[in-house]
Image (cartoon, rainbow, N blue to C red; front, side, top):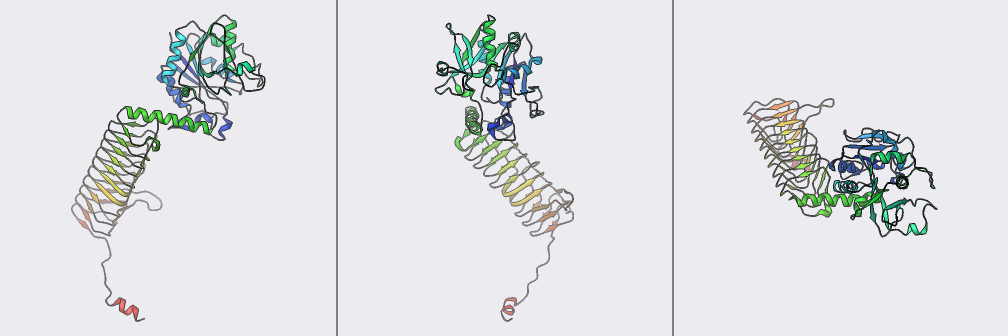
Length: 457
């Protein structure tokens, strides 16, 4: 059988989010919400993924490259949304329909639904769950043989009878269809409900009327089908997604000391025996190798760590720290910072767009911006690269094995040669030849008897 086409419905306006951001683009553990079912569909082996969006262009450029976008011209219900994608559906392939605001569905759940559908001669198979409180969900109505007779929506008065409202089995909005049967049935759906909308569940009685079977696949973990309508729902789903992420890392050999205070985005990768201390946030596409110790209270954003890196109480954004290096505590590494193997950025150090060579050290209380620091150099406390002249940024080049004195300012553009020294308190404005000592400070002058004379005034 051909690989299924997965259609993800994402045209809803999401007014209950109270946001200028479309609901399905709200961030969930490092990805827009709609990217979660997209990733699950791709992992489940979808031959094609189609997202149905609205006419406002909100999803333009917001989807992965391999995903196609169909437009629902007007908000006329879920059946109309699927019909908007009809030109992209293969009648000879199964079609799986997901919702862009049901982000916790997994590849395994999608594959299980597809397998259940293939195992029968049903034209449609719907994923269902049983809830103690099924309010606001469409109820699954069974026939005498246990098949699905239809789904009754409960959005408005008169949509369902009291007996139907008592049903606990509910529609999840996730379906598998035979492609040709779906396309034919969509043309016969009518908006006979309080909202005058075209509901996708109304395809099911059309199929039954045509003599085709409709099956149901019960999903036992109802959290996989949780929808997001407002920010309260989003917080609930985020907590579940975060627990799933942390548990996967821990089962893969990562120690997370306090999961309750740790945030790790879905695209973060961590090596075995890495230890994440409390209060640590790992965001974006950050990664760490093996045997690292990150935190406590450290944030990484889109940063890459090698093996055996130590980073307590620091903030790193868009940078790379190679194996054996150490950062912090209380360091700030900004975009473009690169620490080579066994380098150090110490306490209250800020580094931006700079290359710190192997074994080089910037121990404390320093700002290094737009600079190259050679291997083995050691910059004293209070070292500052003055990289901006008010108009342009300039680069500082510090050679290998340089020994910088405390409170040294390097006014770029300037170069310090290999093995050179700078005296404490110097302001370096000219190049320093290799092996030289640069002294750039006013000579000290002591005023004799100053205190006594001051008292006599």
